[in-house]
View (cartoon, rainbow over the protein chains, first blue to last red):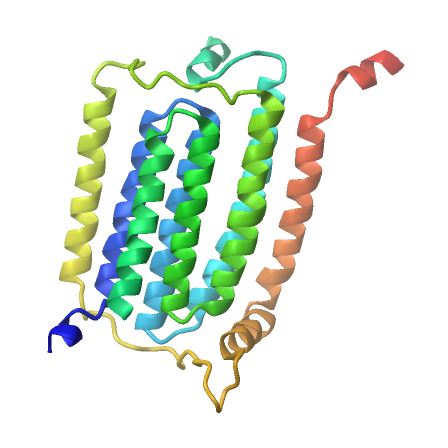
Length: 106
Length: 180
């Protein structure tokens, strides 16, 4: 009975994904290194992927896993373009944080 | 056993995620990200998504993190960031409140919505003697290449656009001006 009640249900995985998403949000809000901010966005994407896979098993539907496949492809494309933008911005200046890019405003 | 796997995966995910946001060194943050991605892959396996677990390890923990490390080394930004300084006053307390509220809202929604959704799919094939060892991969491939084949083809266009756009973005402009 105890071992049966300790079997992880879908809600456990969904709550884990929610906590992971919140940690990613906190990182994006607080960290100032653009690369680390990108990593936190990856954390948020992974939290959503975990939710998709959990609900695919819960609802017995393979389409949730198909969506995760496409999310991974879009995440890869997003990382490539984002890192390209960061490289092109930071090549000519020794800026370490996103605050140093405030000269764009005006 | 499932409980043990869940606890291990959750510890990997949460320790890695906390490591990403508290480590000062960007390289350490990237390596913590690998721990989180492996934890997500473990939880994919425990939820019968075997193909996605393999893709997670190969694409995320392999390609994307290597790309991050490559850019860190290329830019030479592998310096320690001072996390003591707060650029905006009260930014961190507000961020903590925001994220705790986000967790609260999401957990309340998950607990309240528990059992609301009904099973509606045709089922996920589990690898057994009848379906063979690659049941999940076969079923996922049938889904992608039949129902979502247009989206799959558009994905290839997206990847080509991303590659060409990145090459254009990072190309040095001096070459063009020196020719003129």
